[in-house]
Length: 274
Ligand code: DGL
Image (cartoon, rainbow, N blue to C red; front, side):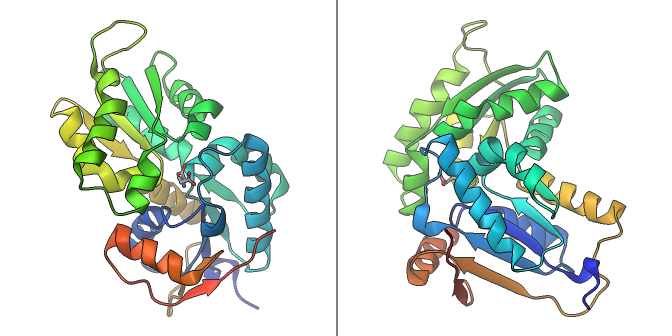
């Protein structure tokens, strides 16, 4: 029988974007095996109603139930924001989401605790980031901004275009405008969506040097490491394996991954949810 610590870490995202989190996990925990599942066939989750996101996340966790993981990371911000509280109660495998670690990253980066959250419509609607930030600092000024155009811009390889810059400007500029209570001038922008780190350069340029731009990938990996360490669940050594599964056409998943990350994924395996 496989020792609990030798089981892989599961990583779930609505599509390819969560590979940003996987990459950081593999960097911080090179001795761990991973299984990534991207529900590319039903991407995007961001605009979907909450009950649908909960249902899809449940299906993903059921799928992981047949792949024996020691811990599952919900790399998708929308799934974390909307479904984590519900599915955590139902899962026998521990789950870590990206919202709390993202909030922690923003709080430690922000000198004035004036934080702008860029996220999908579903994540903003859930208010999960605002809650997590205020759990850590009840006096924090939080302003959320839904950025519905950005996921498609990244997926279609348009991140370095004037169109991307214009869209980012439209979303970010209002958070930088002097305006007191309604529009605080943020000193930190939290990238609350898997795809936005891929627009980091543009976002930093638009935000200017006085604003720090943070995401949840590094702090999520750190949280995973801490949990595994505390519960003596780190892997004991030996060869690691990394498997990537996707719903929908495999070639499309590989193509989007190539467009976004500029690298070829090894074999992508077919998964079916539902
Ligand atoms: N993975 C989603 C998130 O982080 C972005 C893509 C989508 O809308 O499904 O919120």
